[in-house]
Length: 274
Image (cartoon, rainbow, N blue to C red; front, side):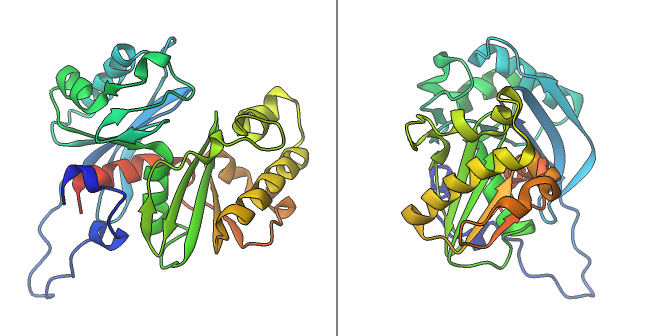
């Protein structure tokens, strides 16, 4: 599969091959390093790409401020060195990523726009990199190992954190770089400045009051995409019991199962090219 086609091929191409006969034990699969770059933190871990399971403890380092390409690349190198890892690395980024180039800069430094992130990280770390949008990576992982497994139709995953990321699958095929947190809604442009997870704290909203904002946003997305399923991801998925009962957009809405680790898993899957 050519590097530029990730997100434009059926999810089935990322799946593991058929199990070998029982008389032939499976050859060991090398764990792959997945790194998830966020507006507040950069985290990484080794992942078994056949199972989606993380191996050992993850490492998280605060995102440098300002989050320039060079500064972020140095943190990424530190994470790869920590795991003594020398293979291909999958890495997410909170912006549009096309052919390894970052074309926007949400919640990071504006100097990222137009940066060849693949080339930069390979130069700084000495390892081959596969960059992709952070929410796309989370969606890939959830569709294979989490809440979206075995689900066809239109599935919309939304990650609520510093901003709002989105990943859309149509019959298990990813529509890349949708960035639905950046649309305008009811005068809020972008909408993530009104109902991202950080806004709950900044505006001192209760979980239920924040969820009412999210529900209005989901109803709007329902009108635009007619999805069969919403998956709510990001760190807030760990607190589902505090707000999930408020969400009633007229479409089945469930929490992500991989929670805040989905980006790491999806990044590793992209690098493994299963």
